[in-house]
Amino acid sequence: MIKDFATYKQETGGRALLLFLLFGLAIYEFIYAGFSAFAFICCSPIIIIAAYFAFKYRMAAFWTLFFVNYFIQWFNKNEWLPSGIPMSLYNEMLEILLLGIAIIDARRTPHFERTANLMLYALIMWCGFCTLEILNDTCGLGINIGAWYTGARLMAFQLLYCFLVFCIYIDNSKVLVQYLYVWAVFSLFTVFYTWKQIHIGFSPAESAWIQGSKTHILSGGTLIRYFSTHNDAASFGIGIASTAVAFYIFAITNKIKKQRILFLITAIGCTWAMFQSGTRTAMACLILGIITYVFLSKSAKIATIVSIVFGFLFIILAFTNIGQGNQQIRRMRTVFDRSDASANVRTINQQTMRKYMKEAPWGIGLGMNYENVPANNKYSRMATIPPDSEYVFIWLRTGRIGITIFIITMLMMFFGGCWITMFKIKSPSLRGIGAGFCCAFISMQLGGYGNQVLTQFPNCLLFYGGLTIVYILPFIEKEWIEYEAKELAIQEEKERLKLEKKKASRV
Image 1 (cartoon, rainbow, N blue to C red):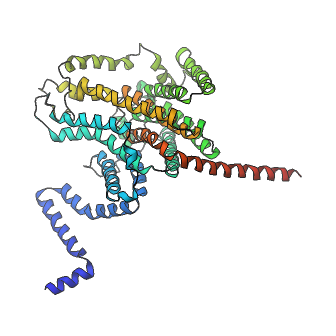
Image 2: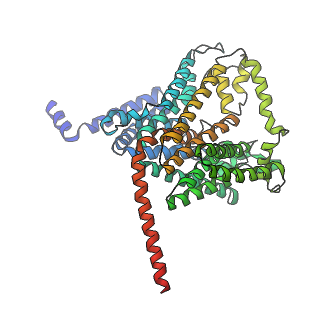
Image 3: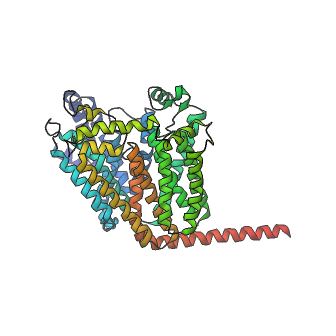
């Protein structure tokens, strides 16, 4: 018997026995733990195989993360995902897998030293505070570790995961260019899908969702706020506006013609899509992002051109009725109307919140939502009131202490990125990439002040990951200059051959 087992093990490696044990475990879990545990055990061989291929093709795993992060809301909206699995789990597991691969095979990942920068210290400060929030029992319900972890990983830990993954895997100019290309293509698809929703219509699942929404069909059904591949119109409008900011700056500063054209098309398309969202804050985000670039560019010429163009657009929107026949433009124009009732309702809600939050300097606790706080609790109103802003949401959960720490850490990260862009990078085009990411980040932060969008998919990974890239640009600048020189030489040679061909055709 022992001899037969040894022969079997040598021939099959024990694979059949392992599958039999997994099958037995799956049946046991199905009987005693239910279908979810049964399904997880059945899927474990797939997970193991996926982990193996991720280890072997690590950059493919990174691009999978980027793809999943960008389209997860679209998949969920169309009901293409299995039920019962939190959306954040897909991103989180891929990020942890990528970090695990980097740690296990550290010899092939010699870039851990790049993570020691101001952004890391700021994130550690924020994550450390959110970890202390586990002791917060303002609601008097006892310590709820499950609720705390759910809130902490979405509000803090995913930012740290994102930072580490981008620091480690975007490690050279080739990957950086690929990242910009992929981001541009995904953004253009989002723009196309907006056009599709307008002119062809919604999918059945999208149509059912929007019919039940009170904030996406306005003016008696004559105005629709489109959301494209995002969760809602606010996340879409602010995210696509911040994307437009980045690609306008990439296009202005890039020297390679084909890239400049792609980036400019992307920026213009994103600007058009921004108006289709009907999100008023998006207009302010676009303006702030461009104004920030005026300061980062350190160029009087750029400052003059941008000031004239955006000053002209501001005058049109704020002081004229040009384009008033378009409902989306009319809605955007209300951002300048202080008497607009819809725009002021958030201020009224915040006044109500302040009365409760005076006695909760640490907030009501991470993860304290309507399902965790009973109706008879003093803070049940705070757990159910729509915050309508990421900053207000953080203030409610972590109090004035938490929101102060959050603002300080965000400013540290942003000004650190600006310092690198202005004083540590010599290449004008690479400085433009850094400026684009910094301006998109501050644009997104303004969006977070007006709407609850900072930690939504795909915005969190896109813009916190983008700011992370700024911190690694000095490490790849030398390689970038060589890459750019090579591409410019190819471009000049093509132009020379084209000119010679043109001259020859005239003879």
